[in-house]
Image 1: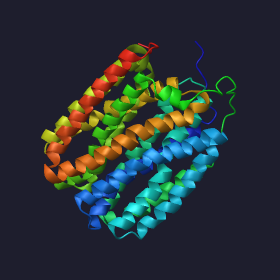
Image 2: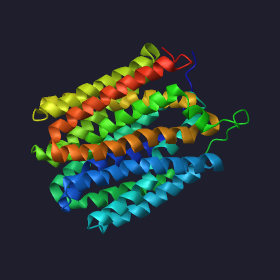
Image 3: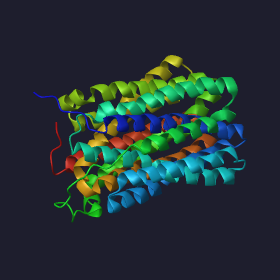
Image 4: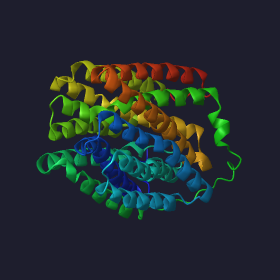
Length: 389
C-alpha cells in the first residue's frame, strides 16, 4: 500500500502548532501565579480565568464566521495573531483587577480563534484525510512541554514578574509563523446550501455539545486552579511546570500512535474511555495531590482526558461540519466546550474553592465528567450514521 504524502504545508502547520501551544503552555499555568503576585484574590483570579474561557464563546465564532464568509482563513488567522501580540503588551502595565479583566478580554478575543482557524486550514488541505492529523498536531504538545518546563525553571530563578516577557516573545513568533500559512483552494459548489444551524439542532449533535461542555467545564478546575492548588500545597514553579509537561508528554505519545488506536477501537470507545479517565483523574487530584506519585498518575491520564478526547471530538465535528462550514464547525465546538463549559466551570469552581475548599472543587469536577459521560452515551445512541467502530 502506497504511503500517503504529507500535506504541502506540513512544516508550516507543525511550526504554528508548536508556537501557539507554547503560549498555551505558559499563559494559563503561570498567569494565575502572576495575578496572585500582583495581589489579586483567588476569586478574582477565577473570574479572570473565566473571562479567558468566555472569550472562546465570542472569538472563535466571530473569526470563524469571517473566515468562512470571506474564504480567506489564513488572512484572518494572521489578523488574530497580530491582534493577540498587540493586546498582550498591555499585560506589562496592568495593576488592578479591572485593568487585568480588560486585558484578558482583549488577548483572548484573538487567541481563542487561533486553534480552530489553524485546524480548519489544515483540515481543508487534508481534504478529509486525517492520516497526518495526529503527527502534525503533536508538535503543539511538544511546544507546550518545552515552554512549560523552560518557563517554570526560568520563573523559579528570576521571578514570576517576568511571565509577560515570555508570553510576548512567544506571541511574536506566532505572528511570524502565521505569515507562512496560506489557504488551499477548495471547491464547495455541492455544499453551498449547507447550514450550521441545521446541523446544530440535531439531537445527537446537541447531546455531543452538552457532553463537551461538561467535559471542558470539569477541566476548568485544572486550567484555572491547578497551579494555585499545587503552590498552596508547597510545590515550586519548577515542579508545577514539570507536572504540566508530564501531561502534555503523555498527550504527545497518544498523538503519535492515535491512527492505529482509532482504527482498532473506534471513535465511540475512545471518547467514552477518555471521559471515564477524567472522572478518575479529578478524583485522584482531589484526594491525593500531596503525593507526587498520585499527581504523576493523574497527569499521565491527560493523554486520554485531553489527547484522545480532543482527537475524537475533532473527527466527529469534521463529519458533521464539512466543506464551507469547517471553520464555523470547529469554532462552535470550541465555543461550547471551552467557552460556555469553561466559563461556567471557572466561575462555579472559584466559588467552590472559596466556600468549600480546593479538594471538594476537584471532586465536583469528577461529577461534571460523569455528566459528560452520560450525555456522550446519549449522543452515540442517537447518531443516525454509524461512526467507525
